Length: 336
Image (tube, rainbow, N blue to C red; front, side, top):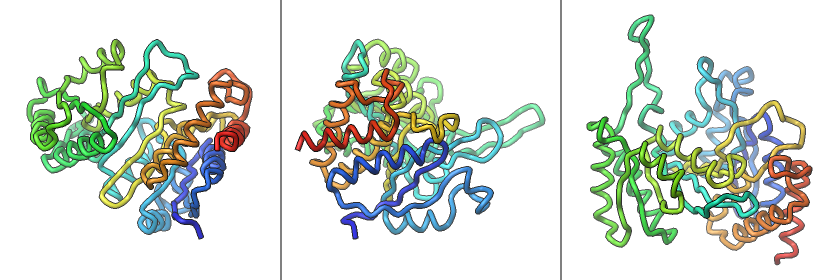
């Protein structure tokens, strides 16, 4: 019996092979985890008639914790995202996406920032309808309670992580009621955290400033749509989506997952980089208070990347998914 029980959601496409590589590394850290495997995603539609089977929901409800591989989201028609479904079912209102420089992926700057995205409202509430045959309408839903709780989460997270500055990203100059409400809630909460510098920035200006001077940002709190877009921008500035971890956190449940998709064309080829899901696993270990193991894995991963001998094709190497993970495990033994 493991010290922790974690729902394992390998996902689709390259997800299962990525997940097993990540599990190999996490298990080697010495943290006792009992993995409870469950299904999710488009593959479940034919079997169960739903993206998220009841058995999976029950497992996550029991364990309060899940590590998830990538799933496939249809573009345009088809079923809605499994990720959006998870967020609604478990009220995972806070999406946390760090963007930190990876020394092996040379960039002209050194950044270490965190995007905290409201995860349940805005356009992603998916309240859409056809006004006529030629007009589609999507409602942008921003609520005062939802805005307050994500702002408080951002400041609490910043305080816990020793961060100095939190900025609200918005378009309140144009969307005065919706984004205006989000900004007002942010300013209300900021008064409770006088030791943390609080500011705001309009989203289009923020996009430009991130490209010009990303090192000037610390913690960003954003409505759902802006958060989705800018977190990918930040991933590109730091090391790419192959290294972008994430967490979806609610009142009782936390689910950790990579930002990238399932890359079905590479499925079964033992080719893709598992670093993003591994980074999400590191975030999960920190969430559990297993800081020593988290640091050990993080240090070993960066050491392997810098050596460049056993890395995947996207980093200029020839190693497969499993070989890269095994190299990290071997490096962890030398770092003990």
